[in-house]
Image 1 (cartoon, rainbow, N blue to C red):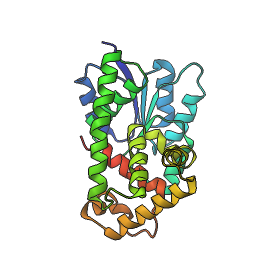
Image 2 (cartoon, rainbow, N blue to C red; image 1 turned 60 degrees about the horizontal axis):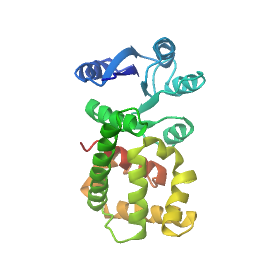
Image 3 (cartoon, rainbow, N blue to C red; image 1 turned 30 degrees about the vertical axis):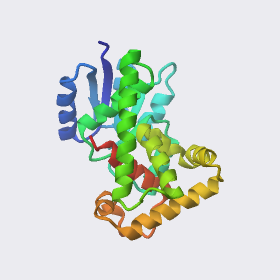
Image 4 (tube, one colour; image 1 turned 120 degrees about the horizontal axis):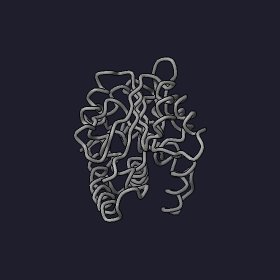
Length: 252
């Protein structure tokens, strides 16, 4: 079996040790380098050219933005880039929107969750044998659709409304591929609008109304997921979708 080689960039040494231990028990992955800042990680990446780069967005000296931009300037090299972020504020989301990444997760996130997400990314890139790739994709999609419906119900967004359908489709797209959160307004809104025969502004307004409904309902699960944002007057559609998609990814 081919081993997919990983470089990890994160200044949390305790967490990187846990990650290293978990990867050592997996046949599919091999950790070939660990760095505590973007520049050190880039030096390792130039030497090792790993299949996968996992990086925190905020690190001392040089951060994840520097690292991603440096990687994208390398010729004939396009690894899977998985970004971790401890916060999901509008500025951070805008930064992520401008980075060419494949996936991102909000911290804290379990190592096994990250590895499961990598399995899916590798399958979607066609880097596994066809049978294994198809099996992983089908199993994940079926389970994901039910997860999304359950979570929407538990935060107070019952089925039967247009905004529920819009939110469901946006969450599925952003949970399957975390980089879709970078394309909420440019791609997801138009795609959803086309599917339901409405205008793009109608999708944006529908999602906004759905979010307002959820905030007014204020269920226990909503309070748990959005605990850091309860005092905010507004939560943007993109931040809401990104935060909820990240929560759904962790439901293994």
